[in-house]
Length: 365
Ligand code: ADP
Image 1 (cartoon, helix red, strand yellow):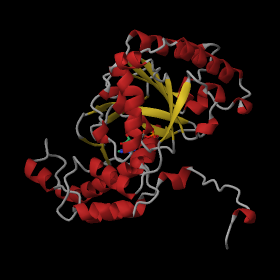
Image 2 (cartoon, protein in one colour):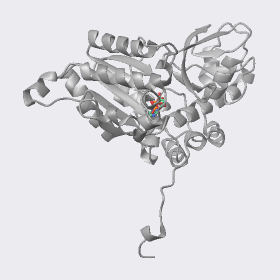
Image 3 (cartoon, rainbow, N blue to C red):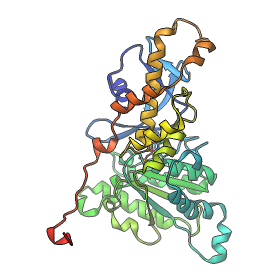
């Protein structure tokens, strides 16, 4: 039931039943984030699927194993991810490259000019906009090790456990430099102190600061923290020499959404009626959708094409014949019906904050 719930929330948005088809789209190492219990996000990763296939048909004998993502960097997390996989965010990528990739690849340039590259950078913006994606791409393109820390997960239960984990990750990063340490939901480790009553949080923040301060100058370790709101984190973390650069990763506009849709439909067999103009139409009609929502839209459309095709497929066949596979295409109607079902995550999760505006602020009317 637990797994069914996770799959429902992440992929199907309804309870899982036997015979359901779940696309595991070449992203076995990509974490799926899931809200499980107490409103806390627990990132999960599909570790093993039996039988392993591009498309898994859930039947009596299908085993899906989902494990909590290991706290330490996992092999291949960033492998293969490039800037080409990111839609929009051109200027943001440029800044990240300058701040992280250049110093990691060419420390001599910075030594010559006596510029100190940043040790820590904060990426902030709504969930699903590509913060993790950028961090993985920059790690991959800089040929750096990628170490992942899930904020809520590192807060261990036992005395000293969280600090120990942080220490180990930093040690590993330094040993295997160049490295990028990515701390997702950094606000859960280091919230603004006035909000913190917990002793654990105070100790963990202190440990994080000690580790950052201890990183070698011009070192080959960069820490990227991600948060929804930059003002939700402890100001002590934002002082010079710590997380002293900030880059906003915003909600994509129409052009960005088109790029994101193009990226996520790249490997998908599309029927001729899914024209470039139709993708533009989709981009226009997906206001407030972030990258993760657009990915969900494409996946849902693909699922719809499968459901259309299923009645013509003999599932008893050892392998579905190529002629049949060749007929499975995603069409315009699949996208349109997916669009009616998928709503932008911002509508579900983020409360829109209206700044206090007084009549006296309104001029000329
Ligand atoms: P965040 O870290 O901001 O919460 P992620 O980077 O984890 O968001 O995004 C989740 C997934 O959504 C990504 O793996 C990617 O498939 C898709 N995605 C998000 N933003 C973009 C983008 N700008 N371009 C392409 N894909 C995106």
